[in-house]
Amino acid sequence: MKKVKKILLFSVIGVLALAIIAVVVVSLFLGSIVKTGINNAGPRLTQTTLTVDGVDISMLTGSAKVKNLVLGNPEGYKDKSPNAISVGTAAVRVAPMSVLSDKIVVKYIRVEAPEITFIGNPFGQNNLKKIQENVNAGAANYQATNQPAASGAPAKPGKKLEVDEFTITGAKIHFGADITLPLPDIHLGPLGTGPDGITPVELTKDVLGEIANGSIKAVAGSAANLGKGAENLGKQGVNKITSGIGGLFKK
Figure 1 (tube, one colour):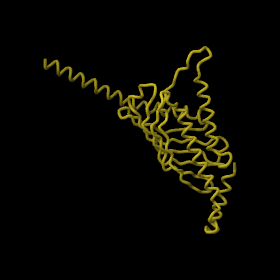
Figure 2: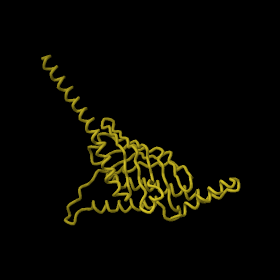
Figure 3: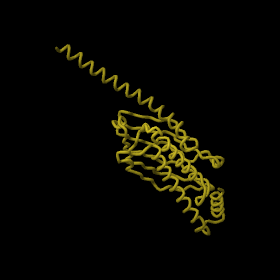
Figure 4: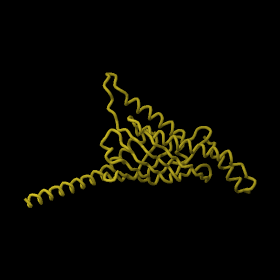
């Protein structure tokens, strides 16, 4: 009897060990799958380059880290700067068991210290507004392709999301001639708490909309106040302000 118990115990331990190894292996491969998905699908949505160097995923803890995500500038702006937004790291935590359901519950997404490059006119056309327009068009196309077919057959539903917390902190906006502004912290959520949740495309649209609107407001406010106190800055300060204003209205 004892021998049978030992055999069962070792069998259970062996199965658990194999399960843990399988989860680790799947996590390693999932990272490359997600990275490929971002690099391939992202540009179709933003109509710009969108790359990420790496995605580390742990299915055991439900955590993930995205490394060096870079969103390129659209046509007409990338000659001034190739990149619109760059993020060193972004941390994500999901409820592990929710990945098996139709709606993935994301506990938080935290983006720290992204670098944003603003090109154009805050009161007219600019690179962030153009990216926002591209994403809005991409979201509309996504919704159209996920409508029921003419035959009446329902479209296959994709994964939905619930995002309890999305924060962007420490962002900096670069514009004009060596001018840098802080972007007020962005806090979104909870999103998609209803049974229908939200789609990844809708989440992207909301987040980029907040970044674009916040950046445009910050740059517009700075432009309105650039001349104030110029008499106290001396010739060098006035020249910097003048070149900064000139850079804003090239588009």
